Amino acid sequence: MSKLDIIIPHGGEPWEICRKFFDMLRLQLVADWSQVRVLVIHDNCADWPATRLADLPVKVEQHRVFKRRGKKSSDFRWDPKKCERAGVSEARNLGLEISRAEWVMFCDCDDMFANVWAMHGILDALNQADACKNDLLWTKFYMEQSAGRDVQGMNWIFVHGKIYRRQFLEDEEIRFAPQLYYAEDSAFNAIVDATIDHGRIGEIQMDAVPYVWVWNRESVTSRPENNTRNTIGLFDRHEYVAAEYEKRGAEKDAAALRARAVWDAFYQWHRTDVATKDLEIIRQRTGAFAAKYADVMDRVTDEAMDLIRKAARDEAKKKRLQSEQEPEERFPAWLEQIKEVYGGGKGV
Figure 1 (cartoon, rainbow, N blue to C red):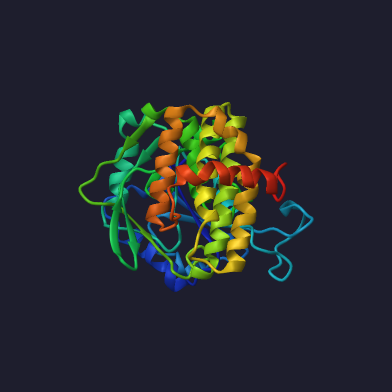
Figure 2: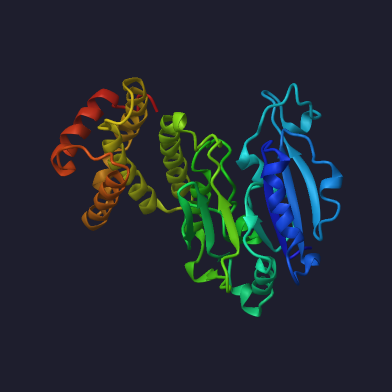
């Protein structure tokens, strides 16, 4: 059993984009590669030629995930003309099924390690005696975007810069949600956050930031024309996470999340920065959500609600979604209107 499995989903990105990840593996110094395995999960795309990976110092396995409507993946052989993409969540989940390592790390195929000692530093931390006291270890990582480079610390949005104890994920039955097409990383981490003993979270401290997450302007979630789709996807994420909270006995967390999402729905409803047809789509989804969970507002403490209102207001201000009037004045009447229009969960 390896100490660490690095799981990399590949959704058809050209080799020219992916090769830098593997080039940085070649440049790593004093890393004990006998403790590491790389699992590349191709999402309905062919394996890379073995020659591209032949001179790597680490063992690389290539696997394939795909789906076809109406049948289980075990019932048929791969046929690119008949199969369709399974998605990044299914690819990562297959990596988890294959993995037998003590720890797992999820990397994107267009990312890279930031320096030549990164893997040595990670393995050194995983081999410390105190590592047994952790179920999640994190490192700082660079977020590389068109506007410049930014250093990220611990957060529950990204899987990047995080190394998870595989047995913890198994014991808690934590997987990525294939039904989500947006914010699946934050949904995964939200479940981790709700189930993990926070005393078992530790930081891997290094002299230099070890990892780079590269923003891909061509990705589905980054394209401006998909902003409305992403907004809807975020509320789908909230539905999923709140249901998972309830399933795991965290009813207060579920209520708080839904209350926050109702306030977010209020700001989304009053947007002025989108076309009329897009606003109607957004209003349909957010209005249905708010109507379905309107009663949850009475199950959240006043103290918690103050924090929720402030967080929603600050987020709306950051995204320039604020309405002209103060939300405390308009919110009650708006929610009553929404309950009348979408009462009974219409549209959800």
